[in-house]
Length: 139
Image (cartoon, rainbow, N blue to C red; front, top):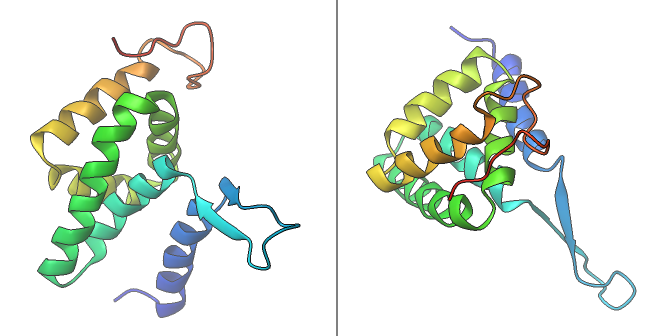
């Protein structure tokens, strides 16, 4: 049985990681309520992880559909950022890798193919960064 505090740390770790790189929306001098949202690519990866953790099929299906839609759009519009977000989550540890594999298997064929294409951005890149001269974006 897992330690409840360990489980909380893992859950909050996912949330903390999701909000590490955020977008500030609105003008803080005009709006009383600034809005902070996670970057879309990090949120998509978060949804893949959460889909595995959902106990109820309907919620799991909903979260998977959200991740699926985000991944398909981001693979076209922001492939480098999606690749980096996926790699960051993958490199976090074995438990996250397991959830990414299980969640990724629940995605549509189109989203899985998009992730494979995005994953090729790191191919033959020894330093694991995609913003280098050796990084190649998909055609």
